[in-house]
Length: 68
Image 1 (cartoon, rainbow, N blue to C red):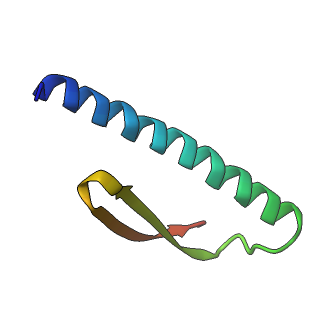
Image 2 (cartoon, rainbow, N blue to C red):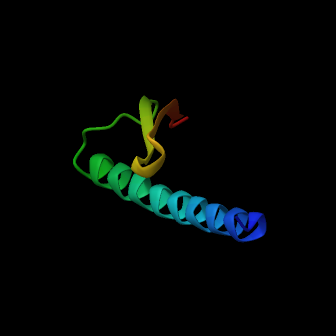
């Protein structure tokens, strides 16, 4: 196993996930705000699941988005 190649591919994947997830969240927030379904002081529960079937890995990460 090439540790450097592995580390680089993990970082690239996480960067892609981070950038795309942020964009999706921002777009969903904009839609909800435009439709009047979201208060500007809301706190939204959020979850993300990381899966790597070949490694039998499934991990859920929970958090909260605070709009204020």
